Amino acid sequence: MIDIHNHILPGIDDGSKTLEESLEMINIAKSRGTKKMIVTPHLFNPRIGYVDVDDVKGAFSDLKQSNKTEVELFLGSEIFCTDLFLDQIDQKQFITINDTDYILVEFPFDSDTDDIVVWTKEIIRHGYHPIIAHPERYKNVRRNGVIAEKLVNKGALLQINATSLFNIHGHSANEYAMWLLENELVSFVASDAHDMIYRNTDLEEAFVLLYRCFSKKYAEDLLFNNPQLLLSGNKISVG
Image 1: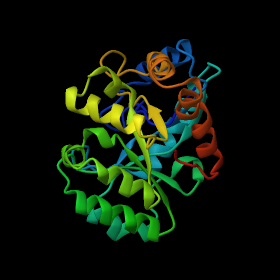
Image 2 (image 1 turned 180 degrees about the vertical axis):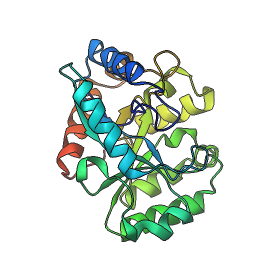
Image 3 (image 1 turned 120 degrees about the horizontal axis):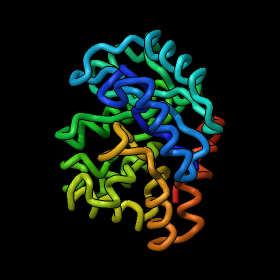
Image 4 (image 1 turned 135 degrees about the vertical axis):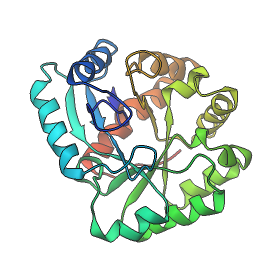
């Protein structure tokens, strides 16, 4: 499997605090069948504070050198998207997914759906392909279910958290995540791991659930095939 969203980079954001913790998170992922991980620290998130892109690249280089497992590591980021980010998007002081035109974005959890649509269109207008992280966690998106289809039709891809499949983020998030899956609007399932216990790097249980509730093909598309296309910068079809 390929995990496209996690916070295993040590000492950068609210995820792993130490190199030792990061290496253990990689070991957990490996033991559960993950072969590749895209490291996605927070950028532009006011709750985290300013994160220097050069610091991210340095920490990533150190982590790659320290990783002695067969798990391959790739660099990306999770961008907190508001007008502040979009005002600076042309300066390119951010990190795309593995140097492709894909960017992983999140929004304030209480964002108005009209704002989310506008921000998504702006990202696309600037030549990037947005992957919207954990749409099931945005309360206004859940209340307006068809907005997800609108975003996908405009060119966005959706990534839901594996933890949302098991009620870690509440019943409403779980219910909406399953609705998105049933309507084949999801392109990725990822760990969004922040630690070794509560939100860890285990994707095996998510794969089994997707296999049982939907199909082997759908599970493989969400955790193997689409993530590999993402790493290569290739087009990803929805549905």
